[in-house]
Image 1: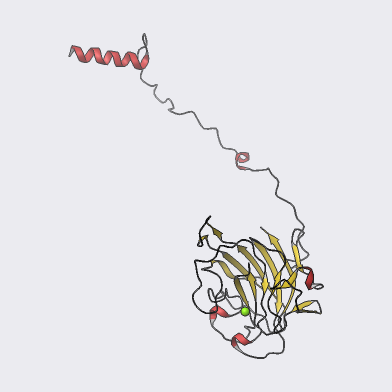
Image 2 (image 1 turned 180 degrees about the vertical axis):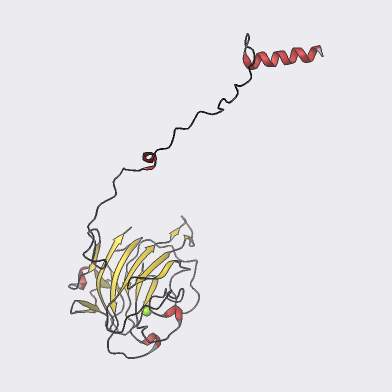
Length: 263
Ligand code: MG
C-alpha cells in the first residue's frame, strides 16, 4: 500500500508539476475553443473573377472565345482531306457538302476537351434507306463517331441512327427534322486519359450531345473507338489531341456554322 501511494504521488507530480494540486474541470467549461460563428461572406469566393466572354446572338452563334472551323466560305482555311491535301468537298450556298469518293475531311487543328457546335442537313431528295440515306458522321478526335443520318421515317438499327454514338449508344430520343432541314448538334467531349506506358484508358472518353436543343446523349462513357465490325476495343493505342473529322459515306450531306471551344 505504501508503494502504491508513493507511485501515485509521483504520477501526480509529473503531470501537474511540483507544488500544483490537480483540479477538477469547471462545470460547463468547453473542452475545445468556440468556433467562430459562420457568416454569409465566409462561403463567398470572389477571386479570380470568372472570365468574361460575349455570347452569340443566339445559342447557335459562336461566342467570342470560339474557334470558327467553318463560316460558310473557305473550307481550306481549317480543313484538309485525311492525307493533309486540299479537300474535294464543295462549298455551295454557304454549306460544306461531302462529295462521294472524296473521302473524309479533318480539321487542321487538333483538340482535347471541347464544346463543339455543328449544323448538318441531309438531302431533301430522299434516296436509299436505312444506313444508305443521308449518311455522314462527326468523328471526335478522329476516332469516335456521332452518327449523321436521315433518321426521319427511316428505320435502321437503333445504335446506328442519327445522334447515336455509332454502335455504342442509341440516342435517348429521335428528334430529327425532315430531310433538307438544318439540324444542330451541340457536343461536350471529355477526352480519355492514359497512364504513362499503358494502352488502356485510365479514364475513358465521355460525350454529351444535344440535337436540335434536346439531350440525346447524356455523358455516355465510350468503350473504345468506333468500330463498324466487332466490339469496340478498350485496349487501344494511346492518343493525344485529335482532329474533328467529317465522314464521306457517299451521300451529299451538308454542314455549316461549325465552331468549337477548347475546355
Ligand atoms: Mg456515318
